[in-house]
Image (cartoon, rainbow, N blue to C red; front, top):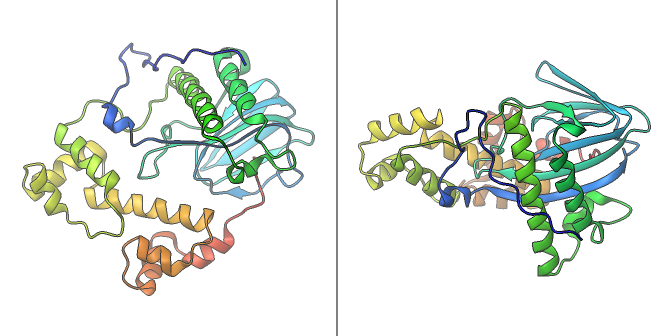
Length: 305
């Protein structure tokens, strides 16, 4: 396999580098969920999704329409489509042939690396490196991908070398993916200069065990501020309070556990810091409008695009 040197870190259209501290980048979760090139599944012609991941589609033939939150994207052959993570409807013309990459590039609170400004589409030829990196990733994963269902990559057994090879290609793809989106005018989440005390608080909140009790006052003391001053400073940088930030992380973790695992609800409640399953159910219903069991039962498992 040819060696592809890593892409330089993206630069904003203004020429200003989009940076944050190395220890903050360490919190970014990156994983390949699956990649394949082929025709859409028979059950992939529509439906509502609630993915927790990012997706990039290169339409090789056919056409697709993606709709959500009042926005509609239509794309045909030789176009990339990057939809916004979240609930959406997607419809594919019969015989549509795709290069499909689903992956995670998200912070501990569940917010993806790119969010505001998505979805977008652009011609295949505009960013040739994006396809080069995608096909290098496809090549690294091909020998390990189940032929009958590429979406089952996660249950395959890997050597450390094979895993590192795929991870390396994934990071190179994310670099090209980020460069393309920045060139389209988007900006990565959580980047830019911040007060060091907010950065310290973010690091603590990202690593705080969700089963442990959290008090904003304790974190304020740790960064050397009064409670109201700390909450005001954090809110100015992050647009939400530390308590709400941690609760958002708890909600995202809960959804992932309900969607991706058979863990009993009682155990999920304990892992998220609830003393009683009834308290957990009430909290979940308040935030999502339905009980956790109903959410798990309703989650659509059929579409694997």
